Image 1 (cartoon, helix red, strand yellow):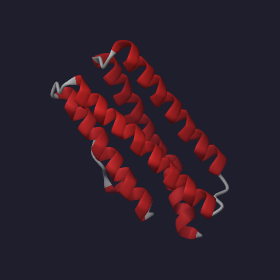
Image 2 (cartoon, helix red, strand yellow):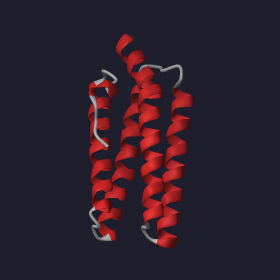
Image 3 (cartoon, helix red, strand yellow):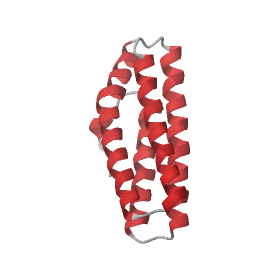
Length: 131
């Protein structure tokens, strides 16, 4: 999965973090596809999880600072993804990294990232730039 310019919100901090998310997500998928040790794949997944949480904190800081009117709905989307990631961690602790778990992570994160950025974050970026 690669970053493309049309996903830019126009707000530099957020776009920079989105690019990093895409890079790390790509590294996670590559490591699995290349058959890296499960510990390496899990380490990348853990990093990705931490970075997602940092990114959400950044977005939420800007939403609060700029009095974003749709903050509650946006934050709810963040909470749902964090809950989903925790479910993936639970599955990992129960079954280890399997092809089916990695495929589920790939599908959920690909769909979520693209949908969230294209809809929710673009709207946020537009609001932040216009304020």
